[in-house]
Image 1 (tube, helix red, strand yellow):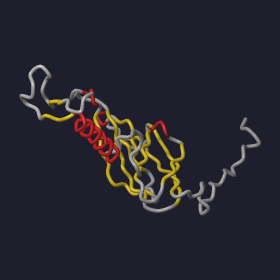
Image 2 (cartoon, rainbow, N blue to C red):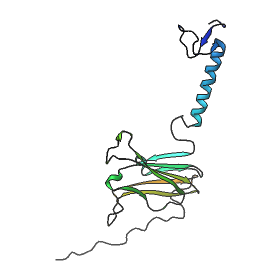
Image 3 (cartoon, rainbow, N blue to C red):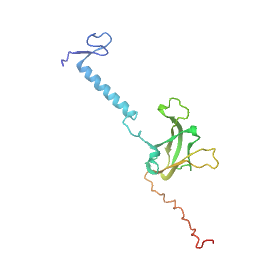
Image 4 (cartoon, rainbow, N blue to C red):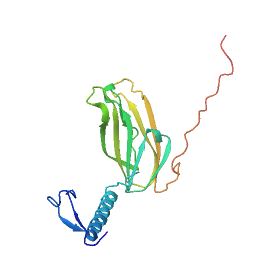
Length: 186
């Protein structure tokens, strides 16, 4: 390409520079290179690289019964399928100590088209506040039932800053000491 070639931004070659700015080939290449760098920096700043955001761990019901390793200062986002129109919702029980609930929300299914009874996802965002290890437990319940019986339970072992599991200050539950009866009634 000749260095004196002129490219008109925003104009077709057949109509000339009616709406564009004349840019030489050398400057056009520099402009395109600069635009690519700006887009790459913006994507990195917005977390556009795919996967988890820096410092945020996203877990779902598929991760239930697994270990989640995080560091103090990170965020943990828990995404659980839900359908509030059935009366069910997720509750955290017991209250965690190594993470603090920052927010909870409900994301509707994108293709719900305002259908009554459409499900979605309950989203819980936690701040990791202290080193340690514990079980983060969610129960899918209808809070108005008596007694409240979970329809579903999901649990995660949360280890902060490499804390051991089980924690040294927790003893395993005692086993039952009851014995089977030795005689049967006639």
